[in-house]
Image 1: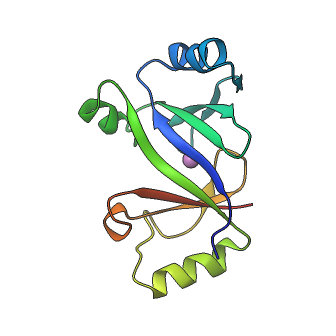
Image 2: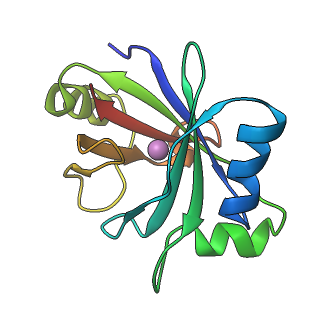
Length: 134
Ligand code: CO
């Protein structure tokens, strides 16, 4: 059911410094920062050959990544994102298998303008997982 690894997300304390590191030091192709008010984050995408890195920084009050940054002030890995063809079918199968969907269980709009859901880390061996309809 799950397809490609769409991205690995890393929360960073300084988005510009992180983007610069990936662009200038690692020599990667780096996007401009994009605000996602619905998700409470600003994102920068780093394009790799086979997947992407999503650099995340808190946006606005009550950002879900603000607490993460408090616990990990230097930044750290936040979630993995897997692609699925049909998010409704995937969510149903995951829920039936005992994996909880965070929030109200319905998809929100992710960083690529596509429907996403997040899965409970306790049901995924300590890793926050995002599922994106690709
Ligand atoms: Co993501």
